[in-house]
Image 1 (tube, rainbow, N blue to C red):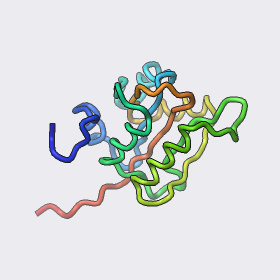
Image 2 (cartoon, rainbow, N blue to C red):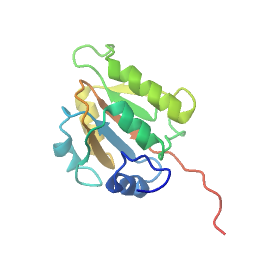
Image 3 (cartoon, one colour):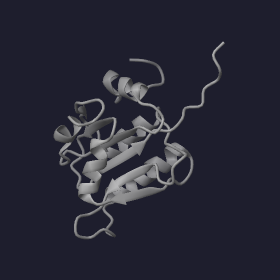
Image 4 (cartoon, helix red, strand yellow):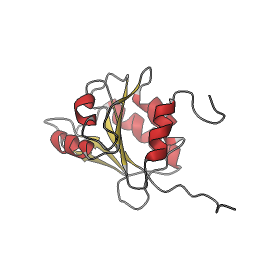
Amino acid sequence: MLKGIDQRLSAEIVHVLMLMGHGDDLVICDVNHPAATIAAETTYGRLIDMAGCDLPTAAAAILSLMPLDTFVAAPVSRMQVVGDPEAQVPVFGAMQQVIDRAEGHSVAMQALERFAFYAAAKQSFAIIRTADSGPYGCFILKKGVVSLPPLR
């Protein structure tokens, strides 16, 4: 364990977050997402499990270390409800609250059709699967710039 790092974040998750650069995408998903299949096509190449966490808890832990991209209109994407693209499920609002709280302002979230989401997920850096049962608990977070003081 380290000071200041949420205990839900494994060493592997912290390592992946450190490897990611500005503009890289991170998928966090529920247990229904075909995460293992899609993770094989990501930059990282394998699935990371965050067992014991629901999506909002996992997102809060991840966003305690990773800022969202401020150079794009919508740094978060979610999957649309199949057959009803305007539908809302509870996890959408719960995630919006977590994301807005982490960033300190309202953050735009775009909705992607199911297969467009899968295609975007394959282009991501990594996929973290939570224990959340869903449904439609599939989100892509675009990493932003971390402002650091100059090295001395």
